[in-house]
Length: 454
Image (tube, rainbow, N blue to C red):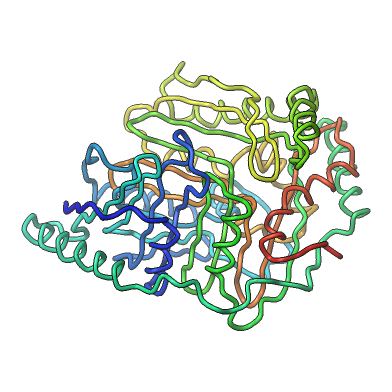
C-alpha cells in the first residue's frame, strides 16, 4: 500500500480535476455531518469494469470471488474506502435475485450493474479537513510488483489531481420540456389501486413513483449541474457517476447498508414533510410528521422488513433497532428515519448482505416481492438507477451504499427524475401526489425550473 496525505480541498474540486478520466465515481458527503456525512471519495480509471446490462444470479458469486481474491487489510486512521468496487446497482438488479416481471417500457436501458474496481482512491475527511491518496497496487499479486504499482499509481493520481482543470465547463445546466408518466389524476388512481390491494390482503404497503423526463441538449454540463444540485440540496449520501454512456447526479439523504468491522447498519426513511422558510411553520411541519400515525406506521413496517432482511446474514439475536422514527431534517424536507443494526455472521460478507436485502424495503414495500410486482404493473417503466444503490464495497470487506433517490439519471439524450412515496390504507391520494413533487423539488430547482408545468 502507498498512502500520501494531500492538502484538503472541496471534494467537488478534486472530482472536477479528474472528471475527464475514465469511469469517474464521486461519493460525496455534500452535507457534512460527523456521523453520516464525514467522508468523500473520488475514484477514476479502474483496472477492471464489471458491467452487466442484464444480470443473472451469477453476479453475486462473481463479485464475492473477485473481491475475495484481492483481499487487503484495513489501514487504521484513514477513511473507510481504501480501494474496491464502486458504482451503481440499478433497481432491476432485483430481478436477478427474485422471480419478477419485466417492465413494459425501458427506453433508457441502464445497466443492471456498473462497478469499477479501483486500485487508487482520493479520500477526504470533512471533519478533520484532511485528504489522502490511497493506492493498493492491485491487481498485481507479487509483493514487489504490487508495491511498485502502488507507488506509480499513487504518484500518477497525485499529478493528475494537481494538473487537472478544476473548472466546471460552460455548457447549459438547465432543462425544460418535462413530462411525466402520470397525470395528477392518474397518480391518484394509482394510489387508490394500491389501497384496494392492501384492503384485499395482497400487501401491507407499496411505494409508487412518478417519472419525469426531459430531453438533454448537446453540450449539457452534467458536472456543472451536479455542482448546483449539491449546493441547493446538500445531502450526506450524494454522488456523481460518469461511467461512459450514462451519468448520474444524486443528492440522496438515505443510507441503504453499511458494513464496517462486521457491524451492519441500515437507515430507512419513511415519512416526509416539506421544509418552510418560516421557522414557525417549519417547526409545525416537523411536529406534524413526528405525530403522524400514518407515517410512523409506514416506517415501522419497513423496519420490520429490514430486520428480516438483515437476519438472513447476521448473528442470531444481534439485529436491533436503536432508533425508531427519529426526526431528521434536510435542505428541502423533514424525514422520519430509523436505524436497524446487526453483526455479520461467520462466513458472511458484505455482498451476502447486499444480495439478501436488495433492493431496499423503504422504496419497495411489504411484502417486498409482491410490492415489487405491483410497482412494475402500475408504474409501467423500468426504474433504472432510481431506488437502486450507489456506493462502494472495499477490498477489505467494508461497504457503504445509498438508496438512489433525489437523483437525475442521464442516458441516450434524456434525463429521468423520479419521486414516490409509501402507500398505506391511511394515504390521501392528493397528498401523496403532492409529496412526490415536494421530494423532487430541489432537483428541479437545480435544473432552473421555477414552476413545473406538465
